[in-house]
Amino acid sequence: MNILLIGSTGRLGSAVYTALADRGHKIVTANRTGGDFRADITDPGAVAALYEKVGVLDAVVSAAGVVPYKPIQQMTDDDYSAAYAGKVRSQVELVRQGIDRVSLTGSFTLITGILARTPIPTGTAASLANGAVEAFVRAAAIEIAPQRINAVSPTVFTEALDAYGDYFPGFSSVDLADVAQAYIRSIEGAQTGRIYKLD
Amino acid sequence: MNILLIGSTGRLGSAVYTALADRGHKIVTANRTGGDFRADITDPGAVAALYEKVGVLDAVVSAAGVVPYKPIQQMTDDDYSAAYAGKVRSQVELVRQGIDRVSLTGSFTLITGILARTPIPTGTAASLANGAVEAFVRAAAIEIAPQRINAVSPTVFTEALDAYGDYFPGFSSVDLADVAQAYIRSIEGAQTGRIYKLD
Image 1 (cartoon, rainbow over the protein chains, first blue to last red):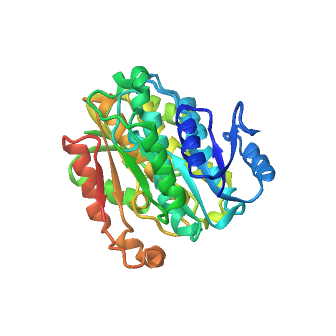
Image 2 (image 1 turned 90 degrees about the vertical axis):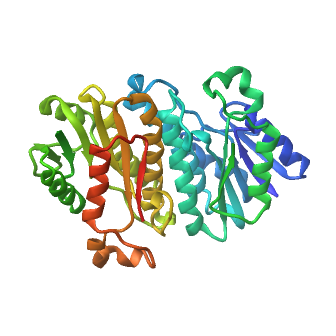
Image 3 (image 1 turned 30 degrees about the vertical axis):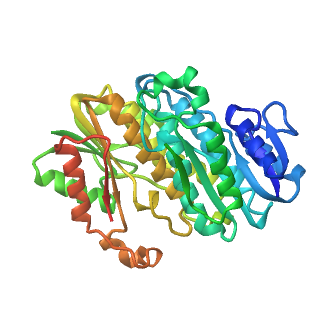
């Protein structure tokens, strides 16, 4: 398949890239820095410009999302708006603008995370963003068929426990390779409107 | 209790007002038009001004949220941003700014809806907004304790079936009086981080 992968240089995106390449897919990458195309997808105009460049796709795959983490007492209106722009609006625009760019049986796979369902302190903006994307995925699925859309919603990555493990006491972790397989399942499978929970 | 009710003149807000008054609560109301105070809570500055006026509260209760409904192919970036501003940011600001305004054992009760979990065509922006608020509620609950926060998440109102019933084929409806009781449960009960689903 012709696949556009957003965020290919990150920890998760690198694992997804490897899994997609192993399956023989033709991948074009877009990142804020590096990759085949430069695009900051928090700018809807950049999403439009990116789609102009890449041609017809069989799958759009997102491994990109940025949200602020702070105690709620320190959060500002701008912090929540940054979460909306950095993980919700960006991925919604990939879908909204991508409907005309993806093949009739193509798919979108977005990234969310466990904070949608299980909170941690400092995570109100992340939870908000993940919850928004997951509900959007369920809703978009019934309108874009036969195109498909799913989300991958992992717990903390095993490979990130050194950096983030203290924020997830007693949580299970998931290997990046297993998260990447959820992307494969979304892209090559037939399901839609699903949230692949990796707890 | 001293209760601030946002959106008291709407179909839902009127029912919540009646239920609160029946329980003997002292209610101050804020609406875009009418009520004790005029406030458009989509403006964070208006939320701040409102809190300055109303004094210390035991509960903040929201029955207000506006989102656009359109087929996804007709949605614009502005439509999704309007949903964020009209139902997510507005209610998040009530909480964020309200933490210092509500008593130590006080509570916030927000409004979401069934589209967070069950989509309908034209509802992608509504689903996004409801999903965002519900995840935020779960996350905020663990940070603001002993203050509490819950959401009420109803299906279509029985009293609104004439207008909206065609959008909810085969769905159960819920009487406004029963939705109002979920607010009472949130306000007078002891639970936090709960989504009261009225399907």
